[in-house]
Structure formats: C-alpha cells, structure tokens
Image (cartoon, rainbow, N blue to C red; front, side, top):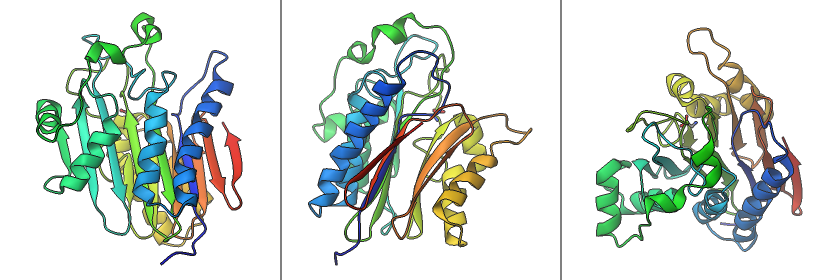
Length: 286
Ligand code: GLY
C-alpha cells in the first residue's frame, strides 16, 4: 500500500549553543533529513530512512553521537542508540557501547536479529563481532573539541519519519552526557523514554536523560497523539512535563503523528531541527 505523503524531521540535540556553530548545525540537520527524504521519495522503507538520516548525524563531528560523542568520567566514549518501527513495534537498541562508528546501525542489527530489544556494553560488542559488524578504534571517535572541554553538555541526535506506506519509525543516538559515570545509560536507547513508535506516532527526545527516563517522555508524547492532540500540541505538552520540581531537567522532542504531521518543542534555548514535508518543502528551525 502506498499513496501516503512522506515526512521526516531530525534534531541535533537540545541545549544552549554558545558559539557560532548554529548555521553549521542546521546544515548538518538538513543533510541528514535529505538523506532520509531521498529514501522516502523513492518509496523506500521508513526504517531505512531513519537509519540513513541518523548515520549522517552520527558522522557529523559537531554532534554528540557517533564521531564527536562526549566523553565519560574516564575520558572514554560510551554511546547509546535505538531504532523502532511503529506498525510492528519492532525495536533494537544498544547501550554504553564503545568502538562502534555508527551505533544506530548496530541498533538496527539488534532489531533485525529479533531475539532481544537491547544489548549493552561488552555484550553489544560481542554481538557486533558475531554478526560481522565492523568495529573501530574507540579513540578514533574522539574529536579535539571533546578532548579539550570540561563542561557539561546535553546533546543527542534523532530522526522520525513517515513513509509512503503510512509507516512510522524513529531513531535516536547519543554520546550521552559529559563526564557521566562509566556504564551510565541515558534515555535514548530506552524504549518509551527517549525513543518510541507505535501506530499513533513516533517520537525522539533529547535533553537530560535522567529526567526524560523518569517521565517516559517519548511514550507520553505518543499517548497524547493517541488521545487526539495535534502533533504540535503533543510535543509542547510533553516538553512542558519537564518543568517539574521533582526531576529538574530540560530538553526537547520531535514527533510525527499517524497522518504524517510534524511537531517539535524544546524547553532549552536551542534545538536545531530540519523537517521536510509535502513537495520537498525543507524547513530549518532552532
Ligand atoms: N538525552 C541523552 C542522554 O541523556 O543521554
């Protein structure tokens, strides 16, 4: 079945941007959205579109995912990623992985393998080896900026897409938060927290993982869609939940509803996004 009008949205993380990198970040989002859009336009599968877009974001050293991931308290990169398809509820995730250039690809392998939803740490590396997934030197993912900095940062990348078959999918990938304890897992790979898709919508979160986990924010947002909220409103009321004295956190969300309508919102000063709808109508926002 085809005939649905595809749409796609990507984000490159919520948080203050204190340097002059916003234009480059927006360009990075656009390149990622276009990579996914090309697949959607050709009638390709929504999971392929999401994976392709997140790979472009992970490969961009400006973003805190894949190459350019932030460092933990031992000065090492440990990354999280998840991918999920709405109609089938198939999901794959990896947590606290090192030496993997594109964690979203490994998450996709976990999804396709189908035995488990999430693999973490050494177990994820073992799985990667068993399925012949290429590993890289952990050091090669560290960029100078991250080596130098000593300041906390929240950043994540994500993509939500809707294909010509009316299928929804989402992918989220992150290096987590700077100076985190080894083994810390954020919201991104946790289904329902930073990443969720079902028949009613798909959502990817960014921001303070410890807050997002406690709120099950991505599932909450999709439930708002299920209960009849418009995409824009669902994103706004989900993000408003972060304003809760009990959890102290901020962040943002991107989502698409079951009609392909896009919504996004943030409680931070910035969240670069790019979305494409209709006749290849490309919109950048921050
Ligand atoms: N939202 C990304 C993280 O907290 O790990």
